[in-house]
Length: 323
Image 1 (cartoon, helix red, strand yellow):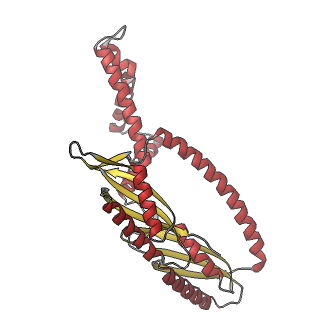
Image 2 (spheres, one colour):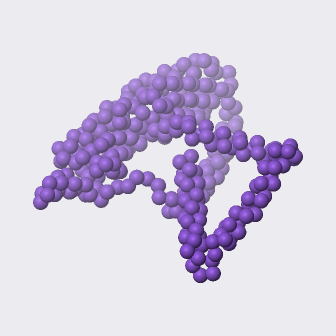
Image 3 (spheres, one colour):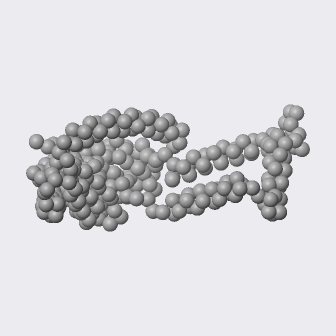
């Protein structure tokens, strides 16, 4: 919705710029342009007459079925856009503690192998949703052989997942497991369909990325990053630090806390940095504890260097290596 609103605003502002330039040209009667010709040049004359006649037909009750459908569709579209604008955006990352997050994909990669460890499970599908409160909402669908006890498999899978997530430190506030009978002879068909869907999905993803890249080139999204921020602004003693130095300092602090492959991004707000850092967690490490330790270490390292920090966020992307 924010991108849609930005596109609408760009179109409106472009129209206003054109209207302002035309008004200035016609007001000062530059060249052959006369102020009296401005409404007809902009097309307002015909638009006004057509709109006046249409409103008159509506007031007199002379409205056709197509007009009713169009007006109803416009009203419904406006209502839907208003609801979408007022609705709070759905979180994209799973919140663990204050300032620490984990991606939904990382949670899926932790849950799927645990589900498939159950001998009765032929295939599984794991969906993870983020919530506004801490913890992930996990839905597991497991395909089992005909004749197996579905309730027993559901209980065993749920117990395995809960134990594993507790060991890794990933908070799961809502876990649902459903076991359905699946014909083993259909497993190869399912794999073929999955490969076909993967190819189509990759093509769609490529088209989406190209379109998104072209859109981002046209629309300036994101927040401004200052190349440097003053640490001391006393006259004659000005001291500044570059954004590259801040990024390297934050990544080094994350590595010092035990994180692997940290990648930090910066944004500036009122001459202070907002740091977002993506990290990998070594296997056998607690996700929540390491993310919290990395966040505290980054904030402490920046404050020791007198770098103005507004906030620090750490997001776990997954495990660094899996043997």
